[in-house]
Amino acid sequence: MASYSRGKPVPAPRPGPNSRSPQNQQGAHGEVGPGTDRPMPSQIMEAAIAGMSAHHNHPNEAKAKTVLKEAVDAVVNSFAKHSHGYGRVNVVEALQEFWQMKQDRGADLKNGALVVYESQPSSSPPYVCFVTLPGGSCFGSFQHCPTKAEARRSAAKIALMNSVFNEHPSRKITDDFVDRSLRDAGSAFKGNSSEENNPATGIGAFKFMLESNRGRTMLEFQELMTVFQLLHWNGSLKAMRERNCSRQEVLAHYSNRALDDDMRSQMALDWIAREQEKPNIIKQELQIAERELEHARLAGRELRFYKEKRDILVLALSQIGPAESIA
Image (tube, rainbow, N blue to C red; front, side, top):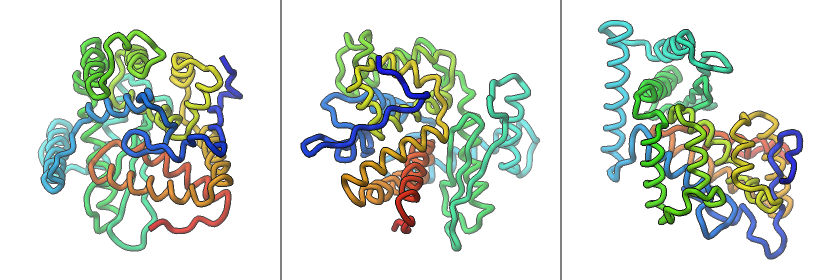
């Protein structure tokens, strides 16, 4: 197997004149990734994760937003009743208290229980706020917020709902959960059941990841999958495959890697290299990333993959010249 340089992701290959470059290929949900006739593991994982989310998209967008708001309010009010008694709850304090309580009860939170908020720069409403939970999961304000304080409360609400729901036994990765997830993934991608036991296939890689994470919750699994989604989007998985790294070896290696500044910087350098081959590709991808992030935020989805993708592109753009505002 090719070695990993100081734990960094392998740089994505620069496209030749006749190559199918990563930026020209559309992956699952429209993200850019290496072209392939078969679904990549990250595509299968992302689709399966989306199918197992706490709430599902509804064809009627207006109704979906109403259902989402009602669900969030119900969970927040229920948590408030059991932890504070009746009355209006300070949802920002409740979210922090929830994670502090988890840590006090022995949860393994490597970076502590602090919940981190990030307001999106804006001089006028609607205001947007993101909240990152101790494990790395990210959520954002999902309503039209006239003030920055309201945006923070909106982000805290959706994060608290997912935090509470994540404690339900149905969100644990069990043997039954693995079986159901593999059936769903196989149906979605028309896979052959015999491929499940072959780690060289997408379904096999997905099975390996699920079985390696028995006992974890879906939020913990999503946090892990973000790394592989980014490696796929960036073209690094394709580069490692071309260096004869097996999928199982790659999965085993990156399952123990945290998404850090070193990995983000390497991915930004990959996009700077692509910019030299195809001018303005970073700005084009940034526009796509902004739209994906906005859509996912308003739908109340977990956002870390979309936000990390945007931030990596912003970092790359800042290193090649002044970043222009993206419409």
